[in-house]
Amino acid sequence: MERRPDVANEDESIRRRVCELVGEENVAPSSEVDAYAVDGKTPKVVAFPNNADTVSSLLAFANKAGLSVIPRGSGTKMAVGGIPKRLDVLVSLVNLNRIVEYEPADLVVTAEAGLRLGELQKTVAKNKQRLPLDPPYADVATLGGAVCSNSSGPMRYRFGSCRDLLLGVRVALPSGAIMKSGGKVVKNVAGYDLKKLYIGSLGTLGVVTELTFRLYPLPESEKTFIASFRDMKSAADLAGRILGSDLLPYAIEALNPGAARVVADETGVQLVETSYVIVVGFGDVDESVRKQLSTIEELAKTSGASDSIVLDGAHQEKVWNTIRNLARSMDTREPRPVACKVNVPISRGLEALDALERLAARRGYMCVASSHAGNGLVHFYLWAEPVTHAAEVDDLARVITEARDLTSQFDGTLIVERCPPQIKDLVDVWGPTRTDFQLMRAIKSQFDPAGILSPGRFVGGI
Image (cartoon, rainbow, N blue to C red):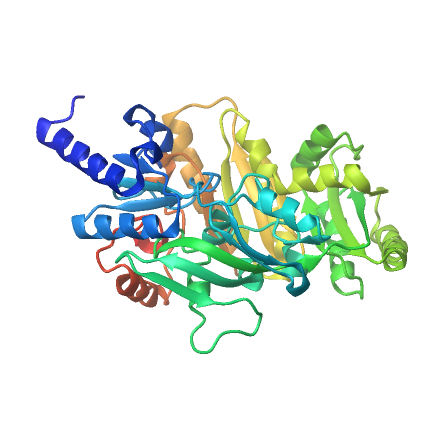
């Protein structure tokens, strides 16, 4: 369908102005903008600014012209959120990819939002340090994308999530003003800790251009303990024993048989067929790691483990990469599974995983599921083969609703992290709003009164 001449002229006018602001070489050709569509909404122009001042100028222009803007990093989390109400300008931050300041002695690093997490890790590893943030796609995910989607991984158990690691941010506001919050030390905030508003904000309050993180030393020794069980109850028993002990792992992951098969297939690690698996990571001085492994081996036997192994070096790194990247493994399947994230009380995490797996089996769906067993987070992926198109969409929507109702019985919540737009038309990916929604809307109105930033993508359609 051809665009009306007046619409085409308006789009070309917008493109020319964006080219003036960022340079024509930093604007995607019109023939390539389809690749940056968000849930079927194609931007009129895609810009790649080189610095924060240019981002600021772009936002000021868009705000004055009433154009909607969606920021983007490497794109690994663009499926998260509701369908945008509109999309005029997509701002990619991949050219903002420099380390601004790094002082190893202070265990602090400041970098631009478009820097890939994997590149940051390589730099700080030269000083035997790391940023203990390990979300899916950790090698290619940008720092800004990880923070604005509040993405994390297995190491969240020991080191916390973005809100525990982020010390400061620099943000371009819709007005074009630049705001800075936080700083370079842990106890730095006098007044409201505004930087935390941007964690998980999905680009709805401003465009984060720079971030400061606290770092941690790399441990002297790292080893991974894996125990297999014939049922979820026994696996949950071990997880409970670990949480009630004086062990200090940096991660405790529980895998259902589907997830265990993915790990076995992609790493070559031999796991008991149809087993539920607990994977525990330890990092400390060598003597401490040895003692903790001895303790957990006894705990696993007491819980009825059918098999256990200890990994180190490249073998354990393969296992953790596969676990944190289950989302990537699922993205290679056809059809792509629906991805959901559940948050329940820690004590009920594996019980919820078991219940969700049973629901999927009862409804005839394949299910791969994992849990951050010490945090109460469950990630699960649903798909059916073969696909029956429209009927499948309706049925999946019903199953998501049933899973959300089931999750509420565990005093938890469910969000849909990835699904086709057709399902988003039928199911609110964020779930029902809570009593704090009016406050959220007031904050959005204060920071973005014209509503140009990521309209429709966040909770309640704001």
